[in-house]
Each structure stands twice: as C-alpha cells, then as structure tokens.
Image (cartoon, rainbow, N blue to C red; front, side):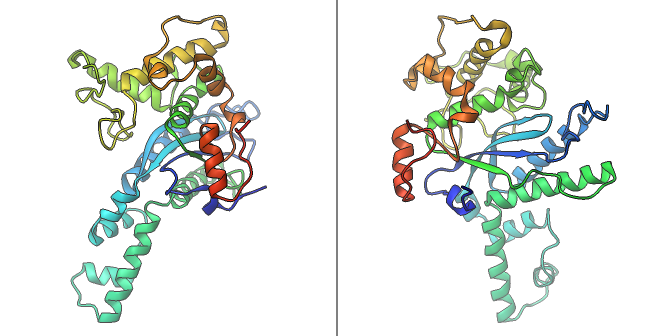
Length: 330
C-alpha cells in the first residue's frame, strides 16, 4: 500500500533518509543503451552537479550517492535547525538561486518601502520558502524536473521521464545509516560495473577516496578517538568525524573506507570465498556481527521497506505511527 509522503518523512524520528529515483523509459538515464547504441554517461555529471548545487541551496546534506544506469541513490541528512537559523535575507538569497521569487520581495530588494500588509505578505513568503528549503520533496522535485527537462530536450521528445514518485526510506538508527551508506557506495561493485571502489565512477565513495589520496601525503597518524580533524574531505559531502564531533557523520572516515573496502572484497563475484580475519573496527565498536553485517548489506534492497533500523527501533516506530508491523521485523 502506498503511504502518504508525510507519513514517510518524520524529522522528529530521524533526519537521515535514503532516496531512490528510477528512469521510466527504456532509454537509459546514463551509461550505454544496448537498444539504441547511444551512450548517456554525460548525464551522470548532470546529476552529480545538480545534486551538489541543490545541497548548497537547501539545508539538505549529501552523505552518499551512486548514479547507476537507469536509477540513482542518495543518502541525505535534513538539517532543519540550520534552516530555522537563517535570516530572512539568507532565505531570499537561497530561494532566488532557483526561482524567480515574488514582486513584493523584488521591490523590497530594490529599496522600496512596503506597506504593513506587504511586509506581512513578505514575511509569510519567507517562512514558506524556508520550510521548502529543508523539504525533501522540494529537493527531489527540483532535481528530477531539471534532469527530465534536459534529457527530454536532448532526446527531442516529451513525456514522463521518471518512474512515478521517488522512493524514500527513513534511516532510524546509526546501524541503518551505516549499512545504507555502504549499500549505496557498493552499488557498482554489486552490479559488476567496477572491481574496485576507486573505479566506482560517480559514487560518493570514489569522490571521498580521491580526495583522501590527494591529501594523504600531509595526513598525520590519526589519534585513538579517530575523529580525524586533519583529513581533508570533499566540501560538497557531509564529512565523517565520529560521535565526538558535531555536524559530522557519526563514524570515522578511515574506519568507513576500510569497512566498505572489506565488504566490497567479500561480496565481489570473483572473491566469494574471501573472508579476512581482520574485521573492521567499526563493526566491533558498534557490536555488529560479521554475518549480520554482510547479510544486511548484500540484501539491503529487499530487507527493508520505507523504514530501516533494528527490530526494536522498527517496532517502536511502528507503534508510534499506529502500525502493527514494518518490513524488516522478524
């Protein structure tokens, strides 16, 4: 049964979400279309650039992404508090980067004196725009409509480009966030599109590795708490830091890279028998069993529905929403 979007996105429960959109036409979103012989790899860059632009405008941070041949994945964090802290001028400036705005606001920007009623209307507009600037639906609408227009223009056609509405999945705890990010970053490995993370084009893991490699000559040995404040990370992605650092992902960068590399080596079709005794530290620190982790990442796409988390968290969240059961429990 299709759920109303307001029932799927609840910022009081979590600020992290996994988003998926799929192309409806046989012509690929990007990559090579075997039916037409055309290559659409350049559209991957359209998506990456648009995602980063929108993240710089919206109060929505990108934790992970993977652009595949006919769909894409995003893991985002909605930073509602940041949006609420913006001044009215900041909201207007951000909104005007994407939309024309309003004649009343235009007059105000030109220095015209507004009447009391007009000032009230201006304030109402600013609050409406503020709410939209941390709204996932507005973010995805702006992303998908832009790509659809560009693709239709290039294909010289009209009509529906995306397969229905985008799918969203609430990540209700840290384990769900970690496994979802790894699942997204490992998409090209699982699809046999790449053998190594470094070769996984148009993914956040590749971008993070390239950034790390370009600056590792200047990297000092991380301290024991693994907060890694000295490691340069991509400015367009939400940084890793650990629980001790505010405004970061609650894991260390090196720990995450090692975990995803280790997991990718195991699930790769050519290394099915691979099992290193050197279990990544992050699994031990989060008390996640190796077999549980590998099963969760390999079967993530079918294991959960609109909500992901431990059985306990899923049961509590289901009860909160007056639902008897969520996929992933039992």
